Image (cartoon, rainbow, N blue to C red; front, side, top):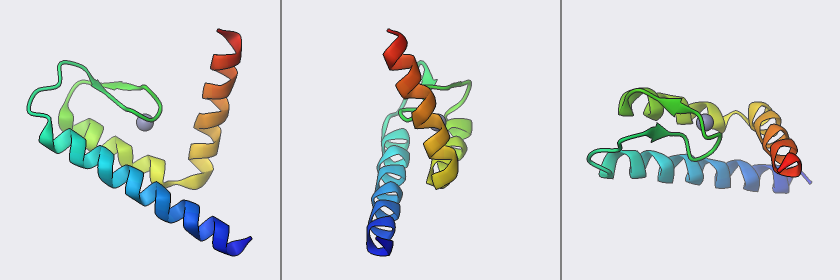
Length: 74
Ligand SMILES: [Zn+2]
């Protein structure tokens, strides 16, 4: 069970890394939107800083629960 938790944490780190990489390689994004929670930011830098919060597992659970509820409503 502990191994599984570690694995998902590593996976999460990879996702964050890929998000940041994507932010960096995309020269101009008209809308700076988080790929994870769909929040919108006014600059690339604030989005870049923001994606870091998704490495927080507790907070992620909260966000995904909210998204599931939203999906169910649609
Ligand atoms: Zn986000």
